[in-house]
Length: 278
Image (tube, rainbow, N blue to C red; front, side, top):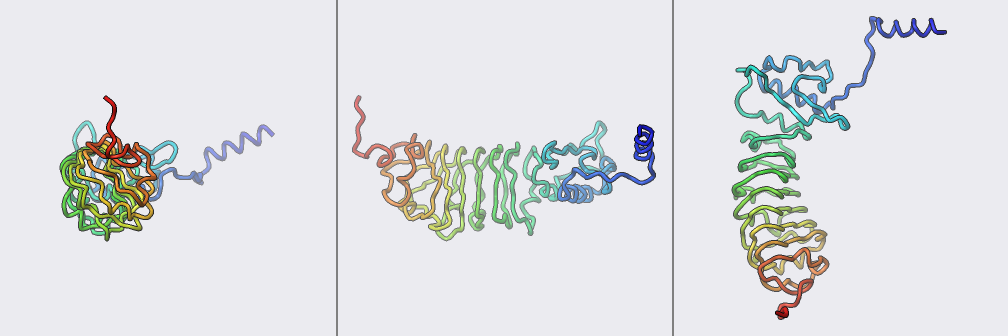
């Protein structure tokens, strides 16, 4: 019996027929990497990127141990490769789990068939430009983006916009409107500064509006009382003033959605004629 086991092991080790092992690399990631290699004109540093081999074993590539999705690329060497230069190719956008550093390449904004853009939780810096077609999702949260939001973005209509936890400044009023199909709009924890008073909102589609920790001023518009399906709302830590409009779903949110403004009052905050004891 023991001899049979040894013979069987020898057959496995020295058999001319290759063993079939499952590949860890996700097919979508592998396809994107091969396109990236082509976009970079097949530099020598990427010679190991053989389509017949597992891309998790390729040089410069790191796969997550649990998901096996590619999260890191380090296309560098001790001797710089003259063939690797210029901007990041648009094909890098097809790696959804890639952790990026630096600014968003301008070529990425001009992709005509871009269905969605999700670059959240990275270390992206600088400002961002005008999009041709961002698709249903435009998610750039948890980065270091600065500057103003381009006015041209107001001409587009994504279902979800998340610019939270950046360093964006200035006006964001172009993102609002009663005729938009916006479901989620999160601009929280920036330095945005605009008048909220006369803005309008999608009555049926809007379910999430978070504006906390900005420099937004004016009053809370009555138009918010007509939003039918609002489930998350937060305007705390701004410079808003006046009475919170009564009606709709605004009173369903507790005081923490309104605290730390210039002079907001009315339910769920104390009434406007309220005076604290000194």
